[in-house]
Length: 348
Ligand code: ATP
Image 1 (cartoon, rainbow, N blue to C red):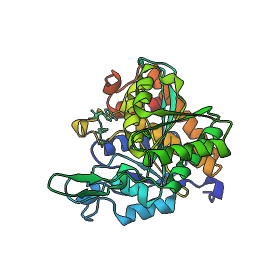
Image 2 (cartoon, helix red, strand yellow):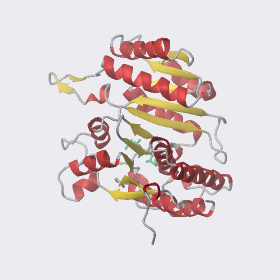
Image 3 (spheres, rainbow, N blue to C red):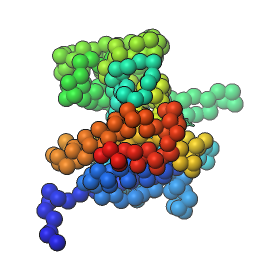
């Protein structure tokens, strides 16, 4: 056999199957990527309950974090963190340890998935490292606990610049910040000021809009097509992501990426959905879309047209499958997880 040239080599990516529906949906997605000849070689690592079960005593083993650092990219299933046992959330830890400060969640209407609105095309950009996710909680007295919302000028400015740069690169026209600076004058005020500064100083050509989050949510459910890029601090980003998922068909169809300067981890917005785990009924599409984002990221970061090309083919195939009414139960269909993957593979 001919020796591989550098250009023929596949990219290393870490695969974290996770918990609940994670192993089923990751298996389905890997099958589709293999069938599309995506230039990826996987290294499987554990996190969440799966890591505890493997006996390491940690929900996020160092070995997993180091593997992601080395590979630079990972595809991750949802992970469960046991409650009340002193473990910090796997997702929060991973984002902090790898300094993946931007979460990106594209929310788009899909042909073949009828919903109240058509033409929804929003990208949520969520600050991923601070806010109420700082985990700084204290019991002050028997009656009082305090949770601290952390906002730093540097992190607010970093995510604001990132959001406007993203908007510019993707030819988006507007960035809207949701905030509650009327109540949290200092923390949300800092976030809002940072976004306004990024717009004024560096990105005046992108329209900038700010809205108090409660009013913003009302407008989202009245007419989501008025929004383009949404920029939110950590907790608001978490909540509004699920709200937006509901506008386009639910948690089964919204992908995501956590991106830092050196690493990116791609994962669906949904959690481990224990109610349907192990039944082969979960929708693998959100994770498949996340894998497409991963391939596009590799394609542009490493200038590899093979990755971009396989991403495009997979997207065309899943769009076709949905149009042909090939759907899992959450979208009103009756296909199993595996059968949906098969329907996509047939259309590659
Ligand atoms: P977490 O706290 O881990 O974020 P969550 O409370 O947001 O989790 P999820 O696990 O994301 O909850 O899911 C909520 C419900 O949505 C699930 O119980 C399940 O019924 C449904 N659901 C989530 N993901 C999927 C999927 N991929 N396919 C089908 N249904 C799903």
